[in-house]
Amino acid sequence: MVVFSVKPLFTIFVVSLTLLVVFTLISPRNPFSQNRISGEPSLGEVDIWSVRRLMEWRPCKWWLQGHQIALPLETNGYIRVDCYGGLNQMRRDFCDGVGIARLLNATLVLPKFEVASYWNETSGFADVYDLDYFIQEMNGFVKVAKTLPPEIATKEPVQVDCSKRKGQFDYVESVLPSLLKHKYISITPAMSQRRDRYPLYAKAALCQACYKALRLAKPLETKASKLLDAIPKPFLSLHLRFEPDMVAYSQCQYPGLSPSSIKAVEAAVALVERKPWTGDIARVWRQRGKCPLTPNETALILQSLSIPSTTNIYLAAGDGLMEIEGLTNIYTNIFTKSSLLNEEDFTNMHGNTKAALDYHISINSDSYIATYFGNMDKMVAAMRAFKGLYKTLFLSRRGFAELTSQGLREKELMQALWKVHRDEFVAGRGSALPECFCEFKL
Image (cartoon, rainbow, N blue to C red):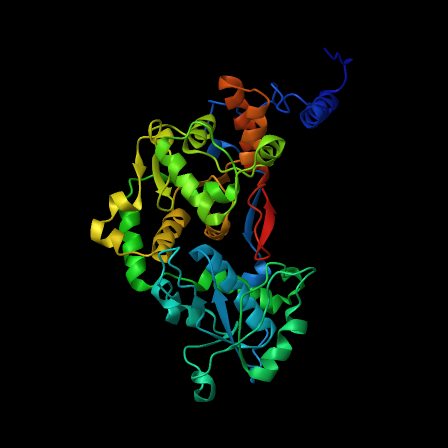
């Protein structure tokens, strides 16, 4: 036991706090101190949302209040953004494409959404989003054309390769020459782009598109509003990812799955051709937080955060969730799209429209928790910050893996999980947002 000589109260507090931080950082066995700073709640005293935060993300003033540079009278040509993957990945790519179009002084045309049997998807941009509203909100930020001029209307755009490559991708250097030459091109934004190099007017176009101009198409918005009204209030939206394809892509092993889950995972593994890791690689992979949380693990963490078992939970998830009983055996007030929509409505919906409903519910929920940090989670977190809704949390897969590998169980594990997520929530870590948002200290 360390004994301090009598010192002024402030000095004692500073020294004690310093020792606590050092112990937290260097302890090899258990990095979670059993002591806590005076005044901080511990497990069971309050739920996670009652903890006082130190900072939050808010839309930057330069975007919302800044004066836009007038658009040039002449356009350099037309750009179509080709979007692939799930709805939120396509939304991200499209938002990036808007910023690129402004950067290159191009006119944006209706984007192309991937038609994919894998996603059960045939809907296009105008099936999901209100095109007229988008054009109205983007006025002054970027030129948008509903239709192409006659001289290029019958032509397919020239595809310009923006795929991921070594080093950072420069659109002015690599794409503008093709735009000037062909006048009508298509792109899929590169993952390696550097948005921080954009001039403010291009960043502002991206921000405006992503957080103010994309509104659901009227029929879909009506359906989403009815779905929102049907959920008992208040409620938590939980984005749970434990589908067979998700497990297959993760290359993680899960002992104890039911026979039906094992069969589904094996089929998905054969489809994606990615075998699970084994041995030391599997252990390191899991401790790095690469393995999706199971419904049972999710329920355990929710309990550690003092989320009551009577909480109304909307399950924002895709089709085919496995082992869901691990969650519903503890949290019984679970609501889903399929349980709240009539059967005909639900079966007639495609992947994009289902994802759009989950997104709408999640940005309007009283609280939002995600078990992953994918495209939807990043979009939802940003939009909730834009709306001033800060009860948003990403569960720590890495923290859970590290703590359980140390042999922590029951109350000791619950207390450690509480501390991990409390610290994340207090500091705002895990919800870093793009250039459209700025840190605001509380």
